[in-house]
Image: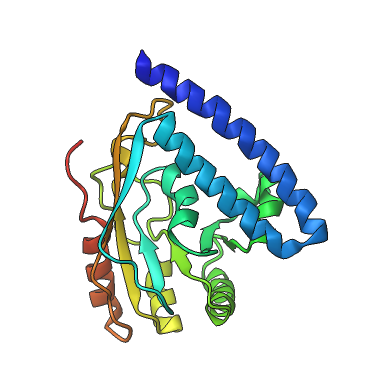
Length: 231
């Protein structure tokens, strides 16, 4: 009962403010396009505030996040990390599925912010587009983040990485920082109910550039699934 009420309060408060901030970002984009990224950071911090005080979800990070030119690869279990990632990094560029950019209002803000759309059915052309966008992001000194499973995965499952990761790893020649996340334990995919508890980011050992793609995939796959404990 209490969990349901807290989840309802979270939905009402967070999504109401999200609409306000999306409209604010659209207005800001006409005057100072670069400020859209600051609005997005405010949104992410508000999201973490709501998760903490309304849902009782606390964030902890195990390990150190290195700065510099890296490709950050993250586990994807819930919506939580897609927003909270803006609290972990400074203006991260995130590769996201193309369908998200069709969401009214939000899609336009996402483009202005600098998210990278991925057309998952476009094959080689999608990889070329992603490579070009990724190189531009790295040249600007922004962190580049990718969810290589392609969609939210129930906690405890460890599907194979999509081909996009290996292609990007080879093409960019960057070392990889793999990050495990267990958000699905308290915010499971497809569930309205969000439970209190800790959400952990576990930073894995850096995977150096230049490895055989199969070895790199194996290392990253093991690292991002390091928190796959039973609920």
